[in-house]
Image: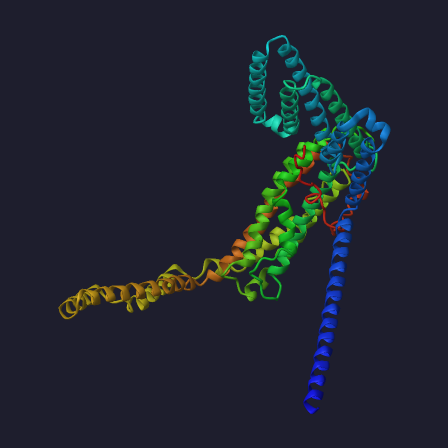
Length: 530
């Protein structure tokens, strides 16, 4: 009975442990599910908060698909159209893009490509019908070969590749479908007409939703994106100089969340985005109040100048990551003029960004006297410390280098000692021992090489000031390249008919616009689903 009671007790404890284990696992699953749901919801909300136009675009696509699906779902429409209604649905999926310019580009390319391909296929079918069956097959094969070769070769022309590549692809697809099908199907012309009508309906719905319902213009995105890039460069320069003269230890690892890195990265990676937005903007109709054509290619030229300016900021940021750093005590001697100079450069960049956002001419006093005064202060500070960069007399340097070289050369064995030792080893040991000695000598020599290199660097008394000299030179270079940016912005304002500068426009907002520009993430990849 005792053993039976113990067995029952242990079985109850095992059941309790199993129940407790399952309960704990279920609680853990619930917690993880709750965390996953919260993180997913936060991601969804964050994507919409970055750019509310994304929400409107998703709603427009959903509504367009629902509207065009009625051609297939409603019985009266389906009886008149039939299976060809699916082409309208596919057209909406492929053509409706985030911006109006991209939708216009793809919609017109698709419509014109289909129309030209259908017309050419109809002409070829009329000619082929007058011949026999064998000659008709040969004629259709030859037509497919020559048209396919010519159209594909045309895609390599830069202007066609840039503006009409999608239309040529649709032309090839439609032409081959109609021409090849006409050999077996006799009512192929009717099929081509129905497909063209469905594509026209799909393109019409896309254009209606893009141009009328909450239009999202590529030109406006390019305009705002250009201003945000200039603001990012201003933020990067100020943050870079402030970090260089901070009392904290410089971090040598680059982080994607670094504001300095984020500021110039958007500029360096913007070439394809600028060109794409400018190309799509050229397709858009005039939607401004004055209805004047905007020179979008000047925005691309300004982007090239900004990338040229951004390379200097990258080099300036690299000075924070060098192995040899100037001591803080030396850097502190030049802190005030460098911070003042960086602040004036950032202020000028912010003024340029503000003038672009407001579509006005930049201030005539954008290069203020404070900027020239900051340059003179930095020049005076550098001249006040000549020994940091020129060092002592050349005789002292030569003497120090000679002493360092003699001290370390004495540790290397002389050629005569090596020869006598080698002869003794040959007489006493085998050839394997000689190879071992040669290997040991090579190891000693390779070990001393970096030591000698380091001694040669540290023996220069002004070596620690050289990194700051490079930093100061790059900071002055930003002022020189700032003139190029100002010239290009002024040219953009002149060609784009920006309004004249007024006295009340000189109040520049030093903080960039809230929320990052999402132009880089708003262009969804296109896939040839048709």
